[in-house]
Length: 185
Image 1 (spheres, rainbow, N blue to C red):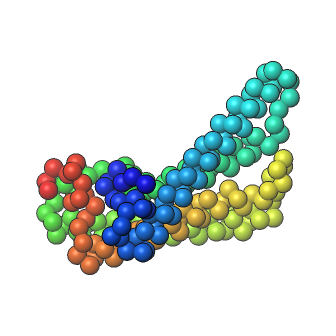
Image 2 (spheres, one colour):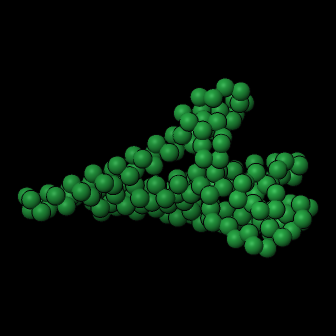
Image 3 (tube, rainbow, N blue to C red):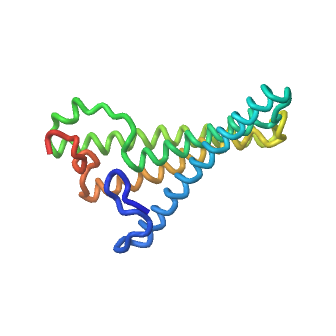
């Protein structure tokens, strides 16, 4: 496996801790799950359109399964984007701070992110439990499979945020300090 865009070694690179290699494998698996979701969406939707146009029939479950694949693909991608620090950030003010103020503002932002992720996890949990008794009309799957994507993303992003917070509090570099786009480093 090749290095990630941020230069992190892939799962097959030696010299990393077992926990780091396990994390790399988990994110490689998530990437492949996203690819599978995209393939499922393309095959089902294109197949459904072709069948309707050519044979006046269709795939009954294509809409529900495509929608499910889309929801999971978005939440899996959100977790991967957080790990790679690819989410949109407005840094006009923080770029003008000194190193100490940058660290304090990063810690404050990470704490706010943890709070929002807690709210997201709590709401997703409630909706997942409610959705266990509600079935989708065509596939018969519980509605909870949609809501579980949000629960998974909140928990995974929470873990990544806690790891980043501990690293920064322990004196590690801020994500912006390891970025070549940061003009003040």
